[in-house]
Amino acid sequence: MSRPIPFTRVENWLFALPVWKSQLESMREQLSRIPRLTQKFDLASIYGKGQKNEAILNEINRRLQLQNVEIPLMELRIDVLEAAIHSLHEEDQQFVEERYMSCLPSRLVMEKLGFTHGRYYKRRKRLLSATFTVL
Image (cartoon, rainbow, N blue to C red; front, side, top):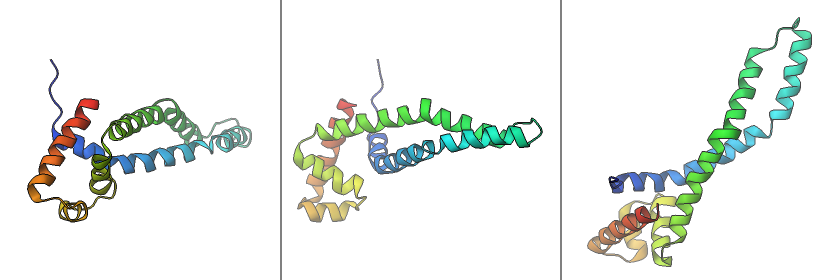
C-alpha cells in the first residue's frame, strides 16, 4: 500500500516546474558544446607530453552523464507535471498558472480570479488532490 503524497510536496513540484524547465534548457545548451571539448581533449594529449587533461575528461564525463541520465529524468518529470496540468479544467489550469507558474501570492490570485478566501482554499485542495491522482 502506497502512502499518499502530501499536498506540500505536490505544491513544491508545481512551484519548481519553471525552474526545472530553465535547468533543462541550460543542460541542453551545455551538451551543444561537447564536440569542441573532445577536440580540446585530443589536442591536450598531443601537446601535454602524452598526458590527457583530466579537467577536460571530467567535463566530458559530466556532460555525458547529463545526456544519458539527468536530461531524460528531468524531461520525464516535466512531462508528467505538464500532462497533469493539461488534464485539469481550464479554470484550474488558470489557477495553476497564476499561483504556481507566475508565483503570485494567494491574496493576489484570489483577487485576480475573484475567489473568496474559503473558495480559494477549497479549490487549492481539490486541485492538488486532482494533480496527485494524475501523478
